[in-house]
Length: 316
Length: 131
Image 1 (cartoon, rainbow over the protein chains, first blue to last red):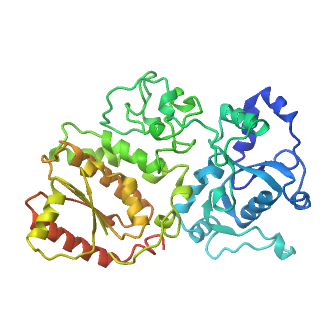
Image 2: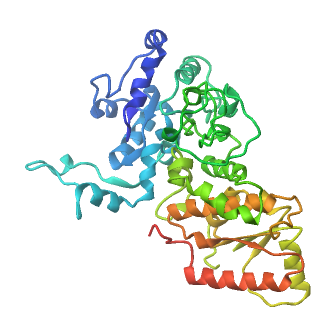
Image 3: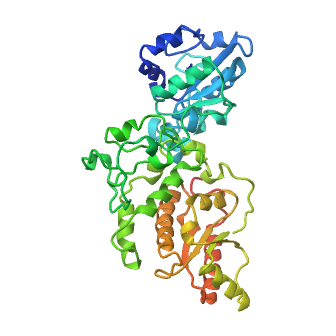
């Protein structure tokens, strides 16, 4: 298990397995896990290629060192699992891609900042360079499997361990259901018309009714299930951490499309245009709302649209 | 540029511009759709990603949609999509929604001329607002 640009939540998520974790631990040998065991990079480097059966990597790729470690673990491991939303899609740290690396460094450390070694240190003691953009794991190395989630819910962790310790699914498998989260959600859906958009702290939601029907931007319709609708059950809208369902495509744009369809301000028509726009204006930070976890996997900097594109013509 | 044109109004308007031999810039790759409300925001983004510097969505005038409310859906989607593009550093003017009826060949030609002029002013999408 390794962490790159990560909050540490993924490392802690295993504890949610409870007693079942003991069963897993009895079947594996941990060779490297900075959060848990004292093995160093040099110990991994000393291993022969393919010596590790499975490397679970969590976190966004943010620094040169993150990328080097991902490549090292790829070489030393038979299987690489992108563990958690950051490794899967880029995750919340990936929203930093809305700013240039230099802007971020200047905002945090002041103008003209360069990573330098501490006084008296050698050049290799300098902190690693930031990559130009935050990246999902698959941008650097071949990823065999994905355990999605922020952090992955216990049901999906068990599912992944059962498969990794038993029969392996085809490469590329995402250890989560293909159906949308709405299918797991116990809230009742009515005919959907959004006459207002509200943020979670602005209302006390009705305990029975669909949160989207109540004006919250819930990404349930475009997000994979697998968490048993944990957030909606607790009155919080889904923010999409399990990533898009296989046929949602661009998760954020699919939600944008669905949401725009549902907005109403009285009778539809030209007279309602201005008030409809006002409803939509209540969405603070549309990218952060719709692409909360998947920005780096969907859009790239410095030209964000160039991500998955082919060549370009250059003329209007 | 890519132009998504609804088959009932804007597409027919484009045909009329052609049969009327109106002159307008030949920069658009037209894609006929059944309704402007069928245009997914992800198609617009795919067009921009694939090299288009702008996307036009042509639909029926308010009240005239063949499917009653498709053009209203399109309008709300474009409104929101343009906000997303702006936040990502892409000029929202690159995505334009226009109402063109089947009888408005001249209007279609004018929209095309104006939009191409606007896109030339903005320049190629590469090296957009993000640098």
